[in-house]
Image (cartoon, rainbow, N blue to C red; front, side):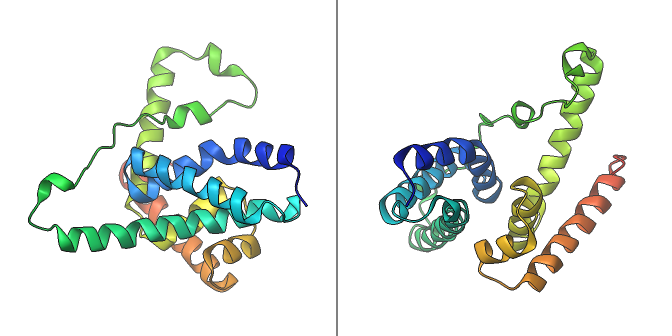
Length: 188
């Protein structure tokens, strides 16, 4: 059984990455925050009695399901209120900064010039934009494998698909990103 301390530490460690993952999927900062908070609550309420080693995978699965639920609700809502554009929001104010999560391993980031910093920021924005353009399942597989650093089996369990599907989605995502970034002059 996981202790309150272990559960709390897990939630703190995954908070920012989970938010970014949700933001990539739903493209709405407020909705992404709601999804992450809902996922955290569900983990604590329903799975707090599980062993601590199982919690990270459970959280990823809950997060995936919450995002799917959000899309289902949006589809229903949009069908019901298709003539009432006031109910739809497209607020992506960009409060979450990818650069905040990027840290140079050797600490040389503080010594870089403003031109280098600006160039790196522009490249990261281009990469982020291309990740958002990936199809949903490819984006999910890519983020779980390379952002969350899960292995193929863990990613398959979190996505509810086979390991072969994960490999296919990841391969297609990497190829699409590589092609798109090369077209923009960014070498991968």
